[in-house]
Amino acid sequence: MTTTLTPKENYLRMLRGEIPEFMPAYCVPHTMPFGDELLTPQAAPNGPIVTGLGVTYVGNKENNYGAMPEPGNIIIDDITKWRDKLKIVDVSDRDWETYYRESTKHVDRNQYCLSVVGGDYFLTLVSLMGFEGALMALYEEPEEVIALLTEISKFYITVMKNQMYYLKPDIYGLMDDDAAYRAPFISLETYREIFKPFHKMHADIALESGCFINRHDCGKCEQFIEDWLDIGVRAWNPAQVSNDLVGIKKKYGDRLAIEGGWDSQGWSARAESGTIDKKELRDALVEYVDTFAPGGGFVFAAGVGMPGPNPDEKAKYWRDYIVDFYNDYARDWYKNHAH
Image (cartoon, rainbow, N blue to C red):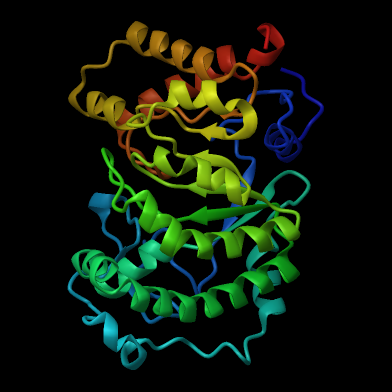
């Protein structure tokens, strides 16, 4: 398993559309994410977090401390009155350079990519109005939604431009969950009219700054893929199995790297119930790799249990098994298979 490339170099090679030296995998870290304290947090393990828009996020053990808007805390209950309700923190005196330097000084930029995330306009609308309120506003007052998001974009873009200038990240994570597991929350028309222009603003800045764009979108969101590619998206995570992933791989090849594509929910449920058979899991892992690895544009992301550093004993056993499988079969797949 001798390699000459660092995890960073190998991952970037894959994003460039080249065949990597070894298969990139989530169990072999190649990217260090940085979450700006002003923006939507990914996790809230140590109590409530308040963003630069005044939204309070909370986490709990049951959802592995994933950050969610505080239940019942509706900031904008009438979209036509958003100008009176929206309060954005003043960042005119923020010491961007010191904050970013101190927050990322532990990252070995030779070994790992640095990623930043943003652009979550649909989720931001939901965080301010609640889910029902956001969907009603999109239907009843789309012009007001656009006006609200335009104002928010000034803040988001200010943060992003400072990130690009001081951090010089390798990856920009365009993060906006606009789909449920079986269907999108919004139509393609609504996406193109309201959200895509804002995503493109972020994508343009990322590309101008030399970043690769990694689109995070859970659920059945395949209807948006053409629009992602149109704005320069290079990779998609977690690429859940409710999408036609085989068809997507066949259609787009290495134009859209699939970072995921594993039935994590199904296998996690089986791990919890104790119904996993070792041979069956290994066969599924072989099929998974052999389906998505050819041609490159793939990151191995098989796993069981809730993500995070402290899995329960059942999940840990199967995670260790999957890591062993990765090292034995997947890691050097490109050396051992025609591609």
